[in-house]
Every structure is written in C-alpha cells, then in structure tokens.
Length: 194
Image (cartoon, rainbow, N blue to C red):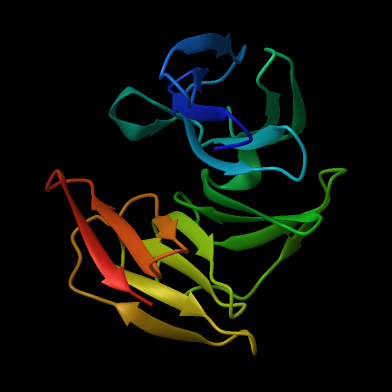
C-alpha cells in the first residue's frame, strides 16, 4: 500500500487498486518479465518489484530483475541480471534495497544505481519473504529450512519460527505486532506475535 493505492504483482503485470472503494485503476505490463513476485513500498509514490526469473514450473527464465513502478503506469529497471539468483522478498531500507533470493539462497543489498553488496548468508536456502521489524531485525522466510529466520543487528541469524512448510512472502501488522506467514502448499496463513 502506497498512499491510497494497493499494488499487486501478477506474473508479468502490476495491478493498482484504489483503497477507498477497491476499484482497479491500472494494470501495468512489465515488458520482458516472467515472474513478478516480491513488492515493497518505496520512499515516494512508487513500489519496488522483483522478477524472480521463473517460467512455468519454476524453471529459471533468466529474467531476474528489480523494477521501480508508479501507479500512473510508468516503471524503470533498477537492475536486470540473470545472475541475481531469483530475487524474491524485497525491503526498501532507507536508501538501500535488501533482497533475499529463492534460487541462490543469498541476501543482498542493492543501492539505487543497482550496485550489489553481499550480506551474511542465511542458514538455509529457497528464501521467499522479507520484512524488517521496528527493533532493526530482518525476518526472512526459507522453504529450504521450513523456517522464519531473524537476522539480528549483529548480523547473526536465529530461528524466529520453524516447522513451517513452504513459508512464502511475509506480511507485517505493526499495529498489533504480528507476523503474517502464508504457507504456500497448505493454502493458509499462520499469524505469530513478535
């Protein structure tokens, strides 16, 4: 959600809905994308969106990218590189984009010009969702570990929750201090306090 708009990723499009009445305002086709996935609000009236670079059956397509998308239909490529490793979860962290990858199991920081910096490697791979808590910890979901990991301020990792089958993109309810964890294979959402 950015302002009065709800942005939703959908394979090769970003849909924009008006919050007040749910009316769809626009569908934005991102040319050359194959699996638009993670999304995070930017510092302005835009969102950042990952293309995990998969085609049908989660086969790598080589379209790995990060885009900046506005509600009016404009978008720009921040980085497009098949070596990104399947970017999935994304968080705009005060000028840096923090990204977790599904294909390579890495956590990276990307500046506005597209320059990448490796962050500590999480305990397991197939990383999906990413959020940042008010206390500075990042929470990331891992299909490989069937867990939610916390990356602490000292760059160490701890287990926030485990025994979760295919934990997907994460949501955060800051008002009630709850983490929302969709379980991809079970078609349900687990809600945990933080």
